[in-house]
Image 1: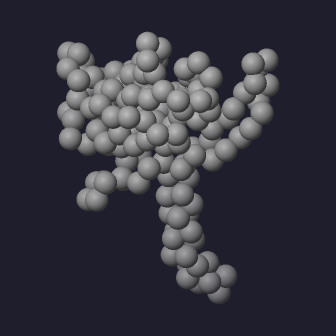
Image 2: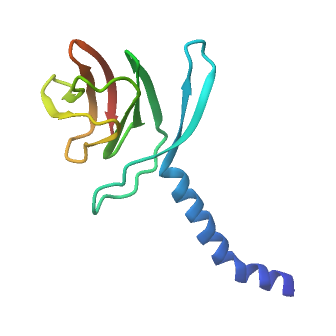
Image 3: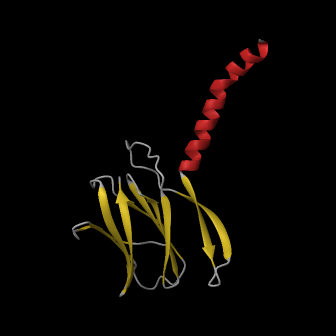
Length: 150
């Protein structure tokens, strides 16, 4: 009987530990870099941008979309999102401006900003649920990503 009593006393500490682990796992994702032959050359933990003040924590099944624009690696996450979308741009020369442009499903431009090397948060909390197009553009070169807002 004493064993059960001790186990019950430790149960709240176990729940706190599990909640901390789950919170930490939901605030990061893993990013991989590959060479041109397809070999993985690096693995890094990408911390997601913090949610805005007063926003509820989102728990969804999301993915990291990865693509290349010339010699730049672009990661867009989480997708689908309920608020803050992270656009991570790494590599390449930064001689020319890189633009982030967000369009709604009807083609209306909602967001336009110059990108910086690293993580660029795009706040979508004010926009309604639906699908959007995120364009990453450098001069005449561009990549477009479909983004779902839940």
